[in-house]
Image 1 (cartoon, helix red, strand yellow):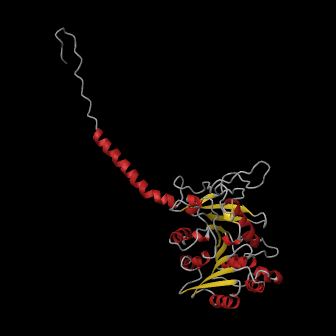
Image 2: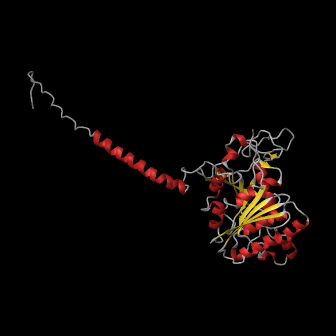
Image 3: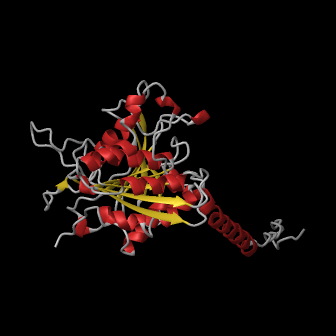
Length: 383
């Protein structure tokens, strides 16, 4: 201990504090931040792919434009303003503006070009059936000013397989992406797509509904040819005449689309039928032979020929290795027998092709879609 000259004890000399380790601590934080960034970059696409919130917009509302509110006392164009098309009056009298009410579309999938495949549960007013419908509109509909007042053609794309519960046309087929690509290549029209369920439940034990109003069963024919088109007219700028309406489907969906066009040629002009049956064969028809005949494409095609129209355009795609060896011969016989007068036909045989969407979907742009696009109207760009 030291003493001051006055004899008063001096305080002990302060002990210097240990040096702060700022640089090493800073390095550790930098490493932590870098690791988080790297993990984020790795995890982001995984979380987006598996649609883990908040890395997805799945389930978000989707609007396709404003539906114009009706004038006081009017019922025209009634809607809630959440979806539809441009509210300005069309320049072309062929265009049908969205009639409303707007559907509650929710995003089911976002494509790389920013367009959405959306989903709505539709309660069919005419069929009484309630089921899922997926829809897609190309960028030309949503983003291109020159088409802002144009009506767009509608394709009702029907599934193969169970035809229930899931969207067949995005399951590895990239159908919406290919439709956008084929349009840019000048091969197809920019269709609005409606992709409804085909059956009211899984087709267990060989039970399916042939896209028809089978007595005692859900009215799937009315659902496909009345309620689904009404949904599209309510929410999108469409075309008033049948010249803007087509079907497409695989397997039993191909049969249902073929039958719908032949049964309602006043409403629909064209169809692409992939690997279809050409006669109804659901076991649910048992005991209902008269109604079965009214849903038989052979009977309907002959009737159309006898009455001389209107013209319909039937495009077929069939593989040489279909699971049913009769599919290709049956389609060829149908074309030979009924491809005359107002019934125009086209056949693409896919060498080595099987009875599945992986065979049909990639080939649509080179032939079938081009051919029916030549028959289908719209949209008309503004000058």
